[in-house]
Length: 161
Ligand SMILES: [Mg+2]
Ligand SMILES: [Zn+2]
Image 1: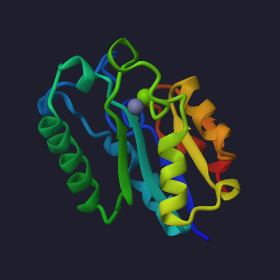
Image 2 (image 1 turned 180 degrees about the vertical axis):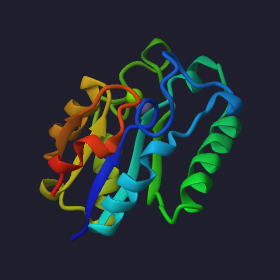
Image 3 (image 1 turned 135 degrees about the vertical axis):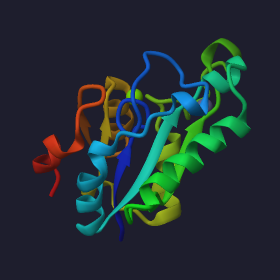
């Protein structure tokens, strides 16, 4: 069995803007997390991103722009020897798509990752800056860790085995 640290994106890996990040120029990867994520990786955790991107449903940015942001995120971390196993996103928004279940606090994206990568939920964690991240994680038996937006992950490493 694998174990994973699931990560919210905005406010955890890149700077929280208070709204959707719509442009690559506004996507600011937080460098203060390099050593903490490298440490988690060396402890044997897969790093998997789970993010709500309802701005897609609203038409505020395109899937191509989102791919550019995620390539930038992956490349910036890869240069540090850190690899994201997968980046899952929900492209829906309740105003347009009803209740899609993959939008956090829905847990479908976590369930997908758990099944695909053979993850043991009870050994895994979800780090997020919103209550809905913790709710999504705990719905599938993953321990949720709530941080402040843009808080360095190094400050909560002691909560992870
Ligand atoms: Mg967030
Ligand atoms: Zn969705």
